[in-house]
Image 1 (cartoon, rainbow, N blue to C red):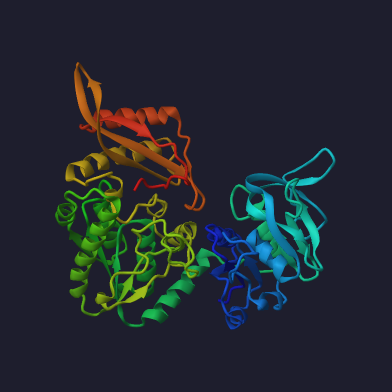
Image 2 (cartoon, one colour):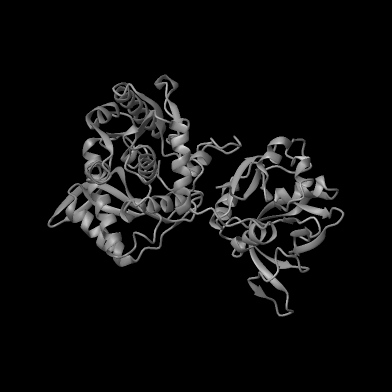
Length: 521
């Protein structure tokens, strides 16, 4: 099936992927590509519309962050966001200057004129009857002269041109960021652009995507065999189910138990994939090897490297037993690519270093198969449901590749892992019992290698501390700490302290992302 497509040209913004996420939520297919792609590429891509992202740069600086000239010649709608509006301005004959007043955060924008982009979209009206939008700003420059053919579309007291439009050519620019959740009508604005103005068909649906993905895998792989590193997490599980749907016994899953899994996780994985799906699964218990290699290692990056190295060596050894395997499959998804600095744009800052983006070393001699690479987490889950995977597996919270290795601060020891496993299981059990598990996006316990004084019975204790972490997010790029009920936290704390001998204090993490990350290490 051929889908209508929206092209997103990336100028280096950290939130460019959120534009794609919002457009995908409207069931319209889109792709992010660097701003300097060739004219030939854009014409072959044949977009129904183009979105220009934000950037850290200023238009008056010396750089090559400009949209290709063909963008203005294709005759398709164009939406410029923040820097995207600035480059639209200067490339089409307007003017941009540094502003004396920088805006970062909330703003109330007055809609002016009656353009298609904003028509009927507002958050409230002033006493004078002006339609207002509550938006999120992030800029230090301003438009001081509109390009020929453009009219004013929106403004604030400190930003005279917060939006502009050339209705005849269907060119629109907004100073604020409609892609972030803080802009209340952002989703409606982007849907108006892609569905109403661009006329794109909303046919990007995971239920239908199964057949497309299966056909693509079969075409890629042919009659060759595939090996996949199965972790039990959502991404690798959905990838395994999808590939198994496509090629059956040509797939062999290798499940490496590194001793840092959640409680009873190994058994759950085997029951699901070997038991219910009848997939070929090679279960390797390498827990003693991993824990031995981690002895005395406390630095977070060093731990990741040790776990990554050991995994590669164990995986390589198993791969050698599968002489006919020609492909390595991974559950890499789009946020992994973005946060690992591995996006097509090559402009994103690396935040995580433990993802599998880039694959195992070339010494494996295998071709890379990543069927989920362009999907967001919610799309992966929708795909998993469409494949018939159980809800409790598909909607499990994310679990990092190094497992409990990055949830045990400092040195990883077997006894620490056992304490953390049990504490984490109690937390998840209480969240499920109270109906909160599906309300939060990710929840887990963290082991802190410090001891505190406690009192149990008539005696003093000197035991370890765990921190509980629960966050809500729509994209995992930003997150807020979950405001769990005090009663739930009280019961969880009481159970952990009473049932997990060796822990006498429980804390709750109330940090948001940013500035904190979701994981502690």
